[in-house]
Image (tube, rainbow, N blue to C red; front, side):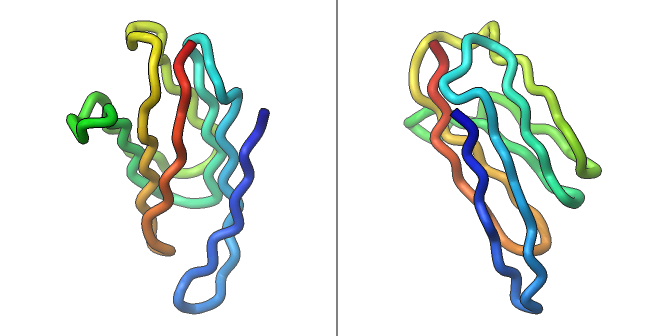
Length: 88
């Protein structure tokens, strides 16, 4: 399953963000149109991973994470976007 989200910034610039596969068994692709900060937290809010992206395709390795539900936060100039990620 691929989640694609349309985000509208204050200046009406449209950006596409894709996160796949979700659920994942380890590798998670995040396609970003611009520079962003990527954060993964557990359901209690504890920060587990943070990465800076210059845009394009980003591959995150979640193989060391336990099976469960995580919150993916993508923060860029357009705002903050949240995606629920399931790790098998």
